[in-house]
Image 1 (cartoon, rainbow, N blue to C red):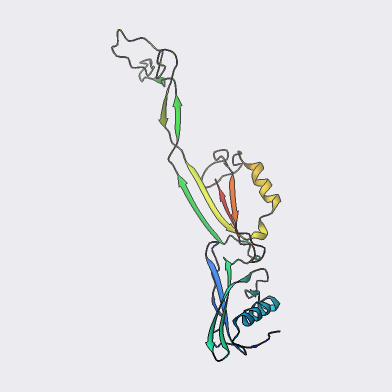
Image 2 (image 1 turned 30 degrees about the vertical axis):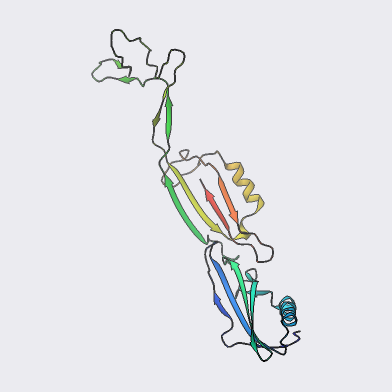
Length: 234
């Protein structure tokens, strides 16, 4: 119970709630006038005691597990034993633990960076029974040694060459309510890393897609509450 008189302002209980998005911050502000003292030490003690006794959290309507926690307060002396108090509650993101669908999703692709190392020229069959093109080019034709199609020979070794080849890396990212990401699920993802699809996936046939693994991140706070998991699949 407060030592002094607290009267809530008419403009109290303003809220800025971000329903989706792990990075965005939700805020809720309550404000009061406090009467009865000019002692700043005493009034700060009263504010902290009152907050700890019953004002530490504000619960988002209909979501018992989604609570905003007191982040800070501001206190200003108005004169005549009166003070202006504002208490700010915050939470990183807002999630509904009963919502099974992803809160947010994104996807990207990357076709760069694919290379293959060749140490031997590619043999091509010539049309009209013209034999084979061994892919070797020598200059001068008569005096240069025949390397039998080897690439980048320096006298002691075959160095080869890196050639750009077609490649595709597909990435999907989902923000998922924390209740759905368990240690069992994380272990299952680990065992699937390095495997290929056993059914059609994103227009690719079974066996054509290699799962490189998944990564996850979560804002984890025992006081403010846990945010959703951000999962990235490659």
